[in-house]
Image 1 (cartoon, one colour):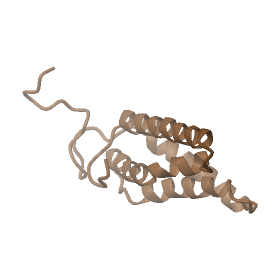
Image 2 (cartoon, rainbow, N blue to C red):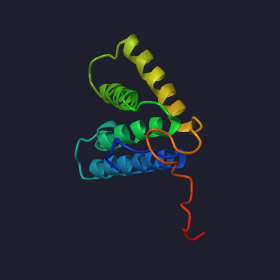
Image 3 (cartoon, rainbow, N blue to C red):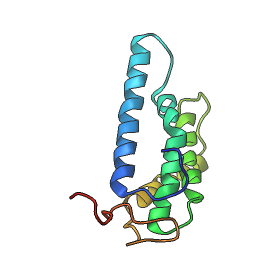
Image 4 (cartoon, one colour):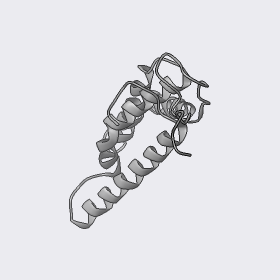
Length: 132
């Protein structure tokens, strides 16, 4: 999961993000019950590196270079964590957050490049000779 190479399907990306959100929320609720001060954003930050690698692999699946994916994911997470800060979030940061969220959703739902591309074989294709 922590690989920047290869391709990731839309369903793999969506399911991982959903699972990371559920686990992060559960960690935050458990921490609150134990009297610890961990916010939901901080609990979700535990999944930062896997989300960044997954976004790069998702861009590879589309046929694009992967380097913008981690930047987009990091922007969303950093600005989200800043909401728990006592400092006021600037309007520009809020705009960057929304643009990054839109870009992240585009990465998740953009149709894949069919067949093999320069980043690897299509993960949706069943190899010949494999059991159906």
